[in-house]
Length: 189
Image 1: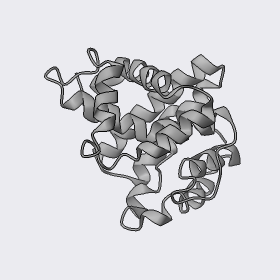
Image 2: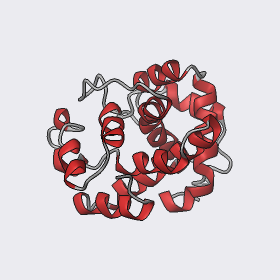
Image 3: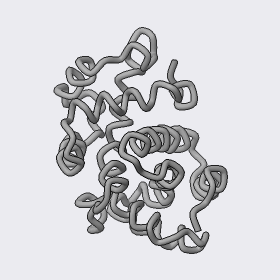
Image 4: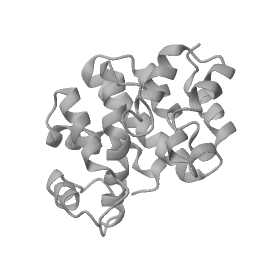
């Protein structure tokens, strides 16, 4: 089954209680929906994948190599279809999963998961604490500063952009644009 947006958030909340994880899921969902519209994908499916991608995070965060590996069990218990399970596992490819992103939806998730965190952090350090005035050049400047958002693996984002066949600049600009309408929901603005 493909859950509705509400069902997906309820399932995520069943396994995660930290509000920052809900905000991250919302950021990834919004970005996935934006890319789906741009790339001709199924916006509802892409959005649900964005919501559920870290379903096992709170259960595996002390053992990050287990991340993406407990998710299939949690999702199958809920009756979630294999297409979503594969996509969820693929976002950890080469990090904690050997499931390679194969289609546009999976490649997008792989790319923007880390990028949304970098963009949120870049927005938070602005005087406006908003994405409304965040530009590509500001993100690229922060990108070069390895001490800034040091938990964000820039090589994953770069690799993902290459897999998507889109320039890094375009991926960053599109992700900023995707997150602007939902910035209040993710703690900005």
